Structures are given as C-alpha cells and as structure tokens.
Image 1 (cartoon, rainbow, N blue to C red):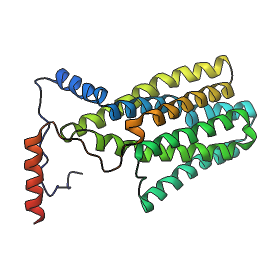
Image 2 (cartoon, one colour):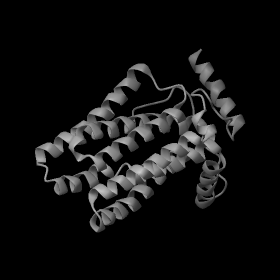
Image 3 (tube, rainbow, N blue to C red):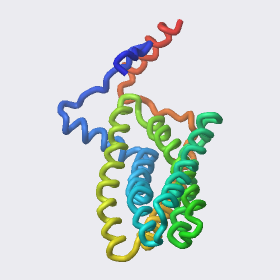
Length: 239
C-alpha cells in the first residue's frame, strides 16, 4: 500500500474543528441519509445474529449432536464453499444492478439456512451452504451500497462507521448468544438468530430507498469545489 500512488489527488475531507465534532458529523451523515441509515442498521443486525453462528454456535451444536471433529470441519467447509461460490460469481459476472435488493435477499437466504440448521441438524451441510451463499450475497453488495451512497467527502468516515457498527454488534452478541445457548440449547440460539436475521432481511427489502437504489447512484459531495478540482485534475492526468 505504501508503494501505491494514485494517478490524481484526492482532496481531504473538510474538518469541522475537532475529533469529536468530525465523528459526530460522520454519524449524523449516516443517520440522515435513508440509504446509509438502512444499510448500517442491516449491517448491525447481520453482524450481531449471523457472524457469530459459525465460529460460536456451530461448535456448540456439534457437541450437542455428538458430531466428530471431521464432520464438523465438513460443515465449516460447506459454509466457506457457499460463500466462495458467490464471491467468485460476483468477480466474474459483476454485482447485481440493485445492490440493496441483492443484500436483502442474501440476508433472507442466510436466515433460511440458520432455520434449517436449528430445526434439522441432519441436513447441516445444506444449511451451511445456504448460510454461506446468503453471507456472500450480503457481503459483496453492502460495501458498494454504502460507498456509492456516501458523499465523496465522507467516504472514509462511512467506511469507518460501517466497521464500528459491525464490531460493536459482534462484540455484544457473542456474549448474549453464548449465554443464551448455555441457558437453553444451541439449536434454540440458532433459531433465535434465524428469526432475527429473517426480520433483518425483511426490513432491508422493505426499505424502498435501499432496495431500489441503482448501482450507478452517486450523491453530491459536501465539498463540491474540491471534488470538482479533483475530477478536473484526473481528466488532465488521463489526457
């Protein structure tokens, strides 16, 4: 990354006079925009109820079902296979024209896999593939959705906010789901995650600005003059 040099200058974001004020400005931008707000909330739901399933709940389910280490590894691999298949498809064919819609459908597919895993552990391989496919659809479309919806002057702040939402939700729900599994059972925790993820996917699809946003949408920058100078500089370099 140190050796990479862009062909044109990217203007820095304007500071509003302090770290705290800049941070609040980034959070405010994310919460005021309907697309960014929906994407951040859905990301929090996925990070809290989907990301902990394979590393946390699957080993607990394996112990409950008396699966061998080899069979548990096969289920882990099945989830990775579904995820990798979708990522490779996106690399070859490109993303869907409506990334918000694709991300929401991916969340629902993953919810179906979680429900199947909790209700019928005997078909755990199929359930894990569905979880991987849904996770891949979501992961390959939510990032572009956030970045293309954010103003040019707030791209880094929106990416940082997205990472913050994921980290906080994952940290909190790891403890909650672990305790829930201990108090009830791993399959109950899985079904809880499945219901929560299904509601998250339905909320994503119900958000009209998020689900219907075309992939070429780009909001105006908050630092318009600087962005115009950057585009002019880029044209001069390319010429």
